[in-house]
Length: 579
Image (cartoon, rainbow, N blue to C red; front, side, top):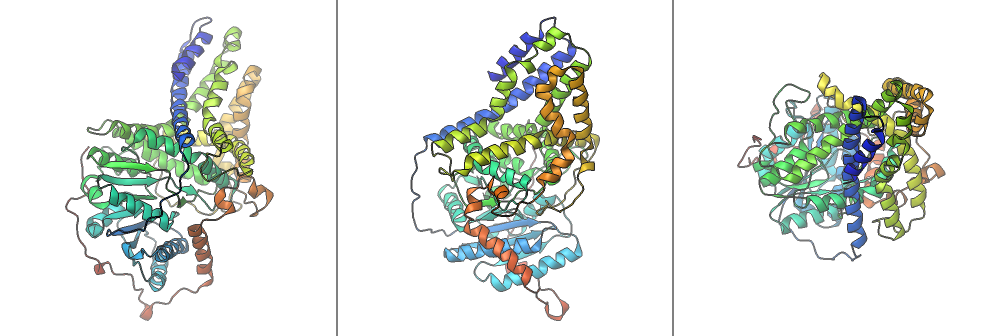
């Protein structure tokens, strides 16, 4: 309804002297953009209603008992070995303290090809074997990286999946508390028709301004969106590839990925495999759940704007592949909606950029003055658009004011953080819009995003200005447009400034404020002020590894944990399926 009203209002404003072809194009782009942000706003609104109506209750303190066996798997490729080692050690020790370590086993599934990096992984594993005594740690490195990360997990399931009831899938920057793991296992035991439970991870350890803004936004609005997604998807939820638990037998029988027709980048192996795996599980009749209420699930954010855009290029290419799968037979309507949302999450950047450029073109073509005066960009429509775009922020503010925003209580710094994050995100948004629009177009011109590990630490002094030539060019174009018709200044100036200053903005936002300083506190989250135990132990373990000498292998041979110790039970069905 919001989209219809917006388009009709815009059409009435433009129809003073008839609607030109360029204006029809603008109306179509406007409708697509308003529809997308309205759906996102509706999801946030539904999530806020669920949180507002939920009564606080103390968690049940029941003893944990399970006869199931869970593999905690870390698919890695050229990742910092000390960080992975610290995470595994911290999670192992947390499970030991809870007295449940005997129900879990760890796997590092390496796709590292570099020989020196592989040697560092093997040395790290030797050290883990000496310290993790209660839940064994296994290591396997593939020399042929067939299927990338999805192929790595599939290879594990084929070879050793029959040994386990569940697998908790992690990323290299994932952490999960023992309580969260126990809760996931408990729910899987109690719900035999559930194949996958996806948590909503909290971002931690952010240092740069970019990462801190992402961390604050996820902490303030992520739970709201998570609740909304859980509400409308029900048992047809989604999978984000990590910080989730999966029933191995269901995954092995039904979640095999197809090879997409055509050549790359949009053909071949599926990059964003997680959405598809969730849809395949649902198609087979299994429940896939999103559980935003489970606490103790953490991950980290890329440290710089450049790193965000690099990740977006890979994610955009993977999500665009879903265009070939949305119409596949047997998929649940909610599963199709998740895939469409993934596509629009990046395609919307292209449609917004196109709308801005179409408006600029209208000015260059000397649109009649009476049309410009009544154009929707100078009426109430921009205010409605901003209200919808900012829905997560004002909804979070309302929940905080009523004490209903989980984790925040009446934390006084919330409002300051909200304002600061809004300013930072407003400065970044046009830059990300152009970068994501390029990422959407790149696969159609045969440009593959590649497969590189995510950056974990900002590189000081890294040159960024030359990477934003597209932003600078479009910003200059918008500046000329404002000179042609000053009435476009109100809505064009903020976008143009961000694009023209993309290089300096990227550099400034890559700075790291000193911990506990005023700049650091501007966007402090509850986890900043009171570090969760699993995060604290991981960070401490990482620092300790820096001070420890590497173990020396006996007789020059690095003893890798032999997977032959396991029962190499193949599951009954292979990971292959047609869609």
